[in-house]
Amino acid sequence: MALFSRSIATAATRPTRAAVASRSTPINPNSVGPFQVFDRNAKRAQRDRAALRDGGHRSRTVDYLRNEVAENMIERLLDVKRRFSEIVDVGSGPGHFAKLLDQNVTDKVTMLDMSEKLLHRDPDSDFEGKLSRPDQRSVSKIFILVDVQRMHADEESLLNSLKPSSVPAITSCLSLHWTNDLPGVLIQIREALLPDGLFLGAMLGGDTLFELRTSLQLAEVEREGGLGIRVSPMTDTRDVTNLLGRAGFTLLTVDIDEVRFAYPSIFELMEDLQSMGESNAVVERRPLIKRDILTAASAIYQSMHGLEEGGIPATFQVIYMIGWKPDPRQPKPLERGTGKTNLQDVL
Image (cartoon, rainbow, N blue to C red; front, side):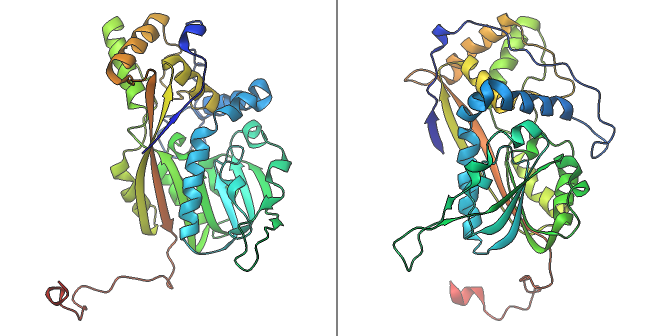
């Protein structure tokens, strides 16, 4: 578990204000599945606003979470020991993961995101002239190019943009926790993959921001005698393996990590979440948080979770997952009873 500190102005220098969220927009009848927990239109608007704020500068200052997760995903991709002709990055944002790819891994990466503004936040020059890893036969390093394409599309309707059995590898870096029908999206990802194709994903788990969640809940119970949905619900880590299996993936690998960041107060944390485009987007969310509840939540947060050196921690639980589309050539476990070595002899 890593701990990082955000260098932001202290809370004393900032005016206390209420955090405001937009009201729910009409439910999209074309959404995947029968249930809609998240307002996808509101989420798109949040990500668009985040990308446009200060010409994208503010959004870039809060890339630290996705950059950290993208680097961990690259490590897992390199462990696969396979080169892919193309990788589609679903929910790519401005390309946190795509910027780390080079021709040792792939020739082409397609960035797909529902927010057109965030998708085009960074110029093409940020993806050009990638520096390859040193050639073992040479001390010099070579500049090589990866073909980068951008596709404005919704992750929940993936097969409207990708043909079935057409992509050798699909990745997703911290976007699937906003989908209304995660099993349905995973099935679409599997359908879009070629046989023996790879899915590598990372999403936020259910214990993410538990400090913020509990502080807001206690403050609301104290001030209003009830609870509102202030932090979006997320997938329980225990369910991910079952979801991948139900979606038809094989050779599954799931692991969990936690990343903690330090903030001066709850206000800087909530401002960074807004700049990330990670504000609450639950359909039945309340439109605003009253100032007295925020003030009480800030005091509770500091009292229950405050750091000895000052400030507060925020925990992000990250679930990393790997699955493969079934193929007859893949290795399969032997049938029960076919083993020829007695375990007692080995031990």
